[in-house]
Image 1 (cartoon, one colour):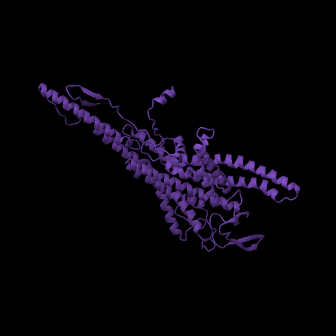
Image 2 (cartoon, rainbow, N blue to C red):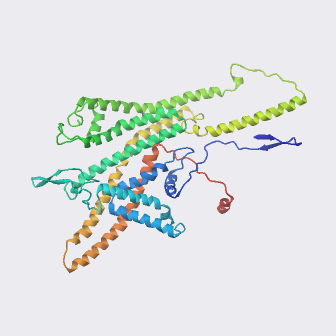
Image 3 (cartoon, rainbow, N blue to C red):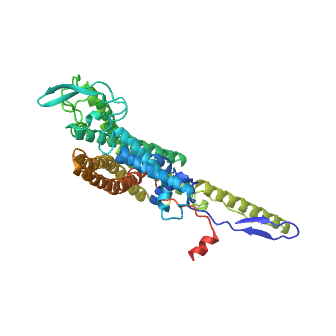
Length: 501
C-alpha cells in the first residue's frame, strides 16, 4: 500500500495498491531468425528460470555438431546443406512462413548448420557414400612386406585431413573405425558434461550460492574427473605411445585398467600397466579412487547440514520480541490534536517507506531463494531427502550418461553400414557389367540407389539422428545445470483474450 498525500486544499490521500510480489519473475529472451528455432528446442524441454543461464547459447553449435558426428557423410551432408540453402533462397523470393513448408522454413538455420557439420564430419571420416576419397596429400601408407598371405602396410607420414584412404577395403577397417568412433564418442560426451558442470557453476555464482559451489559443484567435478577424466586421459595417452618401440609387455585395455582400479586398488600387474613406472600408476589410481569415494558423502551431507544451521539462526531471529528474555513496556503518550495529526502523517510516511523497502527487498532476493537458499519453510528431513535423491541421480546418471553418448558411435556406424550396403548392392554391382543389358541394369540400379538414399538416408536417418541429438541435449547435457521450471513472459493483450474466447 503506497499513499501519496494530496496537493492543494484537498486533504484526502490517493491510494495505489501494489500486489505483493512473491516467486520468480517470468523469463524473456530476445530472439532473431537464427536463435528462434534453437530456443524452441530448449523451450520444449523447459523454460529457464529468471537470470538462469540459457542453454540455447551452446546449443546453437553443439546440437548440429552432435548430429554431424552421427550423420557424418560428405555426400549426404552436402544434400542436406543444399536443401537448407534452397529453403533460405526460396524464403527470400516468396513468403514460406504461411505455406505448407512453414515448419521446415522456421528450422532452416538448424538444417543449414546440421548440413555443415555433417559435411565436416564426413570429411573427417573420409566417407562419401561409403567410398573413401584419396585427396589432399594422397595416402601416406605404402606396401611394406607380405607374410602369411597378408600384406603389411607401412606408414610414411600423416594424412592431411581425416582418415587415410588406405583403410578402405582392408580386413580390419571395421574394427579400426569402431575403435576410433567409440573413443571419440566418449571424449565428446565427457567434455560436454564437464562443460555443463561449469555452466552450473556460473548459475551458482549468479545466485551468490557459494555453499553449492564448495559442497556441490566441486565434489561433482572431482567425481567426474577422477574417473571419466582419467579415462579420457588414458585414451589420449595410449594414442601417443609408439607401441612398436615400447618396453611394455602388452597393449593394455582401458576398460580393464578402470575395472582393476576398483577391484584391486594398490596393485598394478603387467596386464594393465600403461605407465613406465608401476608405482606412479599405483599412486595416481589410489589417489583418484580415494578422492572419488570421498566426494560422494561430501556432496550428500555437508550442504544439508549448513542449511540446517542457517534455518536454526533464521528461526531464532524471527521470534517475537515479547517471547525473548528481555521485554519492553510501552507507556501511553498524551498528545494534542495537532500532535496526533503530525503523528498520523509520520506513521503513514514510515509505512510507505517500509512497504517500498519490503517490495524492493522481495524483488532483489526472490531469485536467491530458489537454489539452495529458500529452504526456510522446509524441514531438515525434506532437505536431506532432496539432497540424497540429487546425489544418487548424479552419481548413477554420470555413468549412464557417459554410456549414452556411445549412441554417437552406434548411429555413425549404422549410417556408414547402410551407405555401404546400398552402394554395393546397387551401383557397384552393375558398374562392372558389360553389354547392351548393362545400360538397363545401370539405369535400374541408379533408380534403386536414389530411392533408397532419399527415403532411408536423407529422411529417416536424418530424423533418427535429430532425435538422438535432441535426447543427448535434454537428458545428458542439460541435466547437469538446467532446472527448466521457469515461466515464459507473456505480455498482457486484450487481443489474445478475445481470440481465446
